[in-house]
Amino acid sequence: MELFVLYWIAVIILFVVGVIQVIIKSSKNEPVKPGLKLIIASVVMLVIGAGACAVILSNLNIGR
Image (cartoon, rainbow, N blue to C red; front, side, top):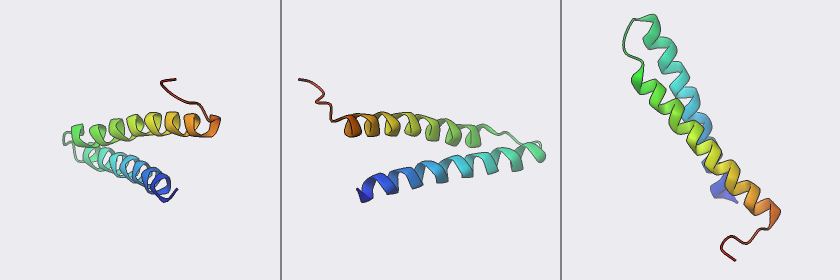
């Protein structure tokens, strides 16, 4: 259970850091690609994590 909490904390941290990087770098007219990569990675992790939680909560047996 602790791993799930750490996973969601990591997703939140990646998203927040990505948004902050995009805001700061766009105000300085610098490339925002690293910040966008962090935001995309956090969204992908969110989708994967939400799918895993849905499977766990619904007690489905995958592959059977």
